[in-house]
Length: 289
Image 1: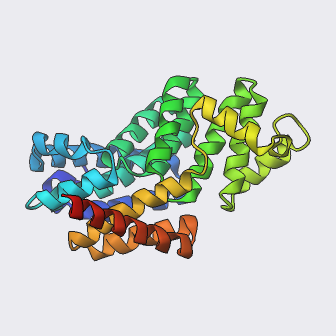
Image 2: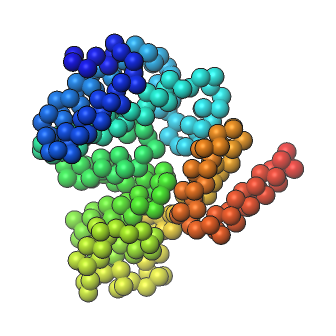
């Protein structure tokens, strides 16, 4: 193996990934795919040698930020697992992109599965994988991944893409009202999106136009389908609760990052009100304990 990741300092992988990404930018997709495939083989060998299987199982069995944060708090030294996961998700995401460009959708799907495995919280990987499932006609996996984004999204952009995914699905199934309701939800998030603007232009004046629905009807059909509405507020609550736990654990950088993400979703006044409510709830729980 030319790169020898398994036999050198693991930090060298970041430099190799930068080289591979340079090849992708330059349009040298085949060269990028060869380098990334070699890196993937070496990196897996490194992980097998340096990370115990039980640790990997424990780490990836926690699907939420909160549970991963708790895991970091109770483990003595989770740094090795954390450091391994970060570059590997990037590696497999790049490999997936190279395979998509080369038209190898089966390998792209497998690569993106690995990207999700190494970073279960990154909704962009989930959404990209969902796109491939939709392209391949695997509606079940597509819907499962798209639904999961609502549970894990850390910013409104991910939520917009998730609503757009469902809108595409309902276009294919001929359910114009549901398509309109999804586009309506995406528009209400007020996140700039060229894809959303294109979709809105395409349905203007048709049965799938969000303006063709009133609020009551939109809420009814979304509830019947099990799709969340206003999910950004729910996500903000989760982010702020995790931020509180991070602060208690002494991880001020993580706490700040999560708080900023929540503020970006719902605005500073609403975020401040939620923080106050969360602390009051914690105090009440301690009082009654």
